[in-house]
Image 1 (cartoon, one colour):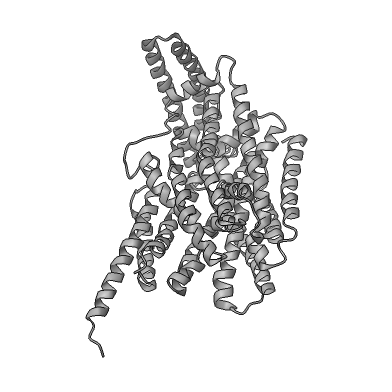
Image 2 (cartoon, rainbow, N blue to C red):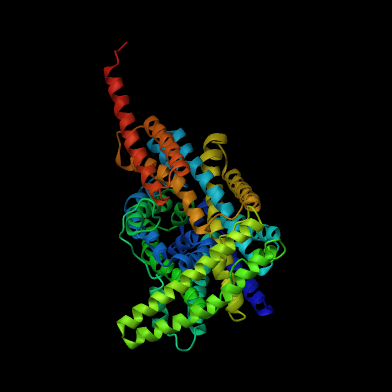
Length: 569
């Protein structure tokens, strides 16, 4: 990175954090202001805050790599989200406002009992506490590898900065900083897309780039094939994605806390609907950036391994010669691939369908050879460095940024990643601190706590969870594709929590003992299915939710029948 890049990173980050702290300077002196921002935010801020909470650094690191390797079909993951926003706005938001809750789990006690409230809160703390560690670790490990930053100081530095402004400014500071961060994130990715198109060869227009990506199977945005083991298709997105979004936005305190800061029900609803309208286009933009990177590398030779420090480690092992042989083949295949890409575009422009089909077959064949070489290279890495993670899709976009973006724009896109990391981490820490304070400290430990005691406890618990996240990040290991790792983690718990809330809303006959036992059975079943089957993780949201509802109704029916038939004493 050049001096200009560093100035962009430091200047933009300092401005965003300073702006958030200044805007929230009068709101963090009371528990109400600290936890809910004084109920003053308007819908644009709420909408951008909700989007920024979900769009972590993992989104901007992993999603372009996902598109590079697998095309656009990941966008189907979000197909259920707009409908979920309508349901959450119509059902969840009015109940939370009517009860004037600080956390979503307070409602569970008023509907069921204390143990169900604590179960829901505990599931959230476990899932979100681990996710916060991944949210810090993901950008740290990749920035460390690509830019040469030391890993531990990167993790600690990022965590310390977020803890500082989150604890200092509270919920309103988080929302205000997220608004600015979201603008930087979207603007940065739009600029990236423009620069990538500009970097393409002169004869490759935007339309030709899309045609070439389609010929290589990367414009596969929608698939109606039904398959339980296929992670991304229309059916998993519209059902599993719906249930996941309902649980995330309706019951996860990191999101509930964002829209409970609204000045009215209408503002909160508009913020959620704003997210529902813009989320799919935003994800499509990020995926499309990855698609353009893929096209760019059809004409410019990409590295055999995008994780370049890993390549350097292999060169110091006994497998160095074997790896060098594959690299020699790689260079030749890349030249062949560019030639075939040019032939395909020429045939496509000629209108000769037979020539186009033949050219496409040759292009696909040489691309297959390149993919095979990448697989062989990773096998060599695995032999040279046993136990090391060879999957490098999370490194694709940041590697491209470092190697091909102009000075200044490198700093802007690094800022995008850092801003995304900070926005998600801040929401998670605020939610973890609020849930621990409200649902455990104020409810179980100190029911007579004063406002000042609650405020101090909230800040201390926020610091505690920040330290837990940093510690977990320090010991984490790279998990397959990071965006999938976070979504899998959420799907293991979200279905059960959503089931509890749906029973609470719609099945008034079911009582606390029945839903509590049903939730335990559901959670155990989902974990067993994850461990022993190949079912796509999106379906766990459906399975967990349905199990809670069905088992809860069954237990309540049996309990009611037993009570009726028991002899009176």
